[in-house]
Image (cartoon, rainbow, N blue to C red; front, side, top):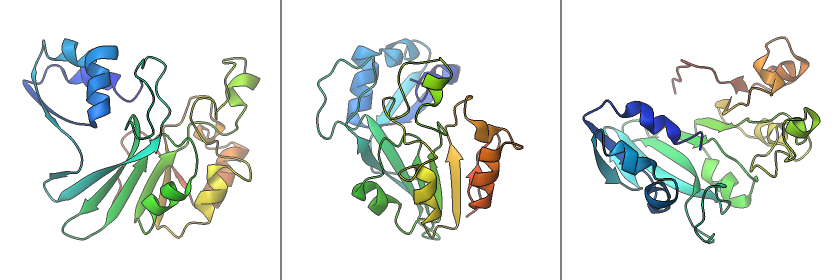
Amino acid sequence: MDHIVGLLSLREQSKLHLVCTKSIRRLLTYEFPLLKALENYCSIKYSTFPFEIDSFAISAFNVSGKKPHYAKMQAKKNNDLVIGLQLISTKTNKKLVYLPCLPAITKNVKQFVNECDCLLVDGTFWSNQEMVSLGISKRNASDMGHVPIEGKNGSLAWLSSLDIPQKIYIHINNTNPILWKTSKERKIVDEAGIEVGYDGMEILI
């Protein structure tokens, strides 16, 4: 939900061009009818992936078959509800990969990020039991579809092994201690050469 409700903030535009998977469009039309509300404010043009704009070629990768809680559609092996994006510059051939939700570090995920120049990856939770230990939720990070940062099977160990020029944690929950620059967890991430994303961050590759 946190990835799509921001569309309502764009309602003051006269026209919008929405690029999404077919499953996402169907979901936001019928089961979480945000688009029906938005269409009362502005016209919407729809496109799906792969997509090209200016000097960028954008493709999508199905990261998981897990579906949002509000989705009632039957889960399918390739339902395109949880995706990652790959942006390639047609001028420089530089590649950026965006993985805001990472339920598992699979062989396909590893192939998707291979030889990219910049990787933006899910940094939602530091530990698997973060929300449970704080008494906020009964579900752990894995239950919510996120690989935690710490641990031998966590994203930090994986990212540390990758020869990628720029690696950045994004989609960070407000319970995650890496948000505090003086925390021991932030120090571990900094020493691993991985950046922590922030509002207004600019990326040059």
